[in-house]
Length: 298
Image (cartoon, rainbow, N blue to C red):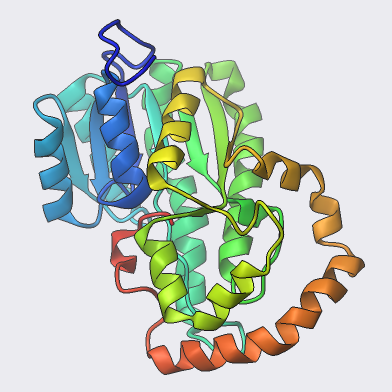
């Protein structure tokens, strides 16, 4: 069904909670879901942006300020959604960040924060919403990444967190099946959001390294296309979502991407790019991009 199709669709009247909803993929997912008849609960760290988006979407949508590492705030958002909109039919656990630097040259707290937001934040989001989802036999989409399949130098914490998200989703899918809750994991490659644009601007060496990756890993997808894939996943209760779809081929050969051969091939480039990334990350004087407080995935 297209956005302009007046017929009721799978999301008509459904309540969808989105984390990291203030900008990027989260905001566009909310817009598209609302256009297809859903009522949105917008969760994030930028109240002004969340309020503006809720106003843009119109009556019947709510927003809640919450850090996904704060269980009490997430619980309040989930309870507030149920109180205001009657329940929760779907959750898109999208909030995430990406740090700058390596384990040798970088702020260890930024690496830890990346794991806390990307992985622990997903766990906390799931825990805060699971009872409401079970009450409606709902759907939980948690955002992993193509980075779950292949390790890239300079992205250790991000890759580790997204690999953890994938396996967490696989496990809770089995845990929640008897309660009628379906769980999907989303695996985008590079998406044209603030997070990716800022990483490329902050670290020219990282940008150069991305250009050398094989297709489709060097391809950048529009935020609109990614949001459309997420909304389609919610409508269909998909088990896996690949953005672009060619990322599925990367997943199929993931064992090769972590093999000794891959170590040698990637290592040749890493020997020159990693020192440059470290030099550039050190010169930044910060562990994240300028919009990192938004907690918006990619």
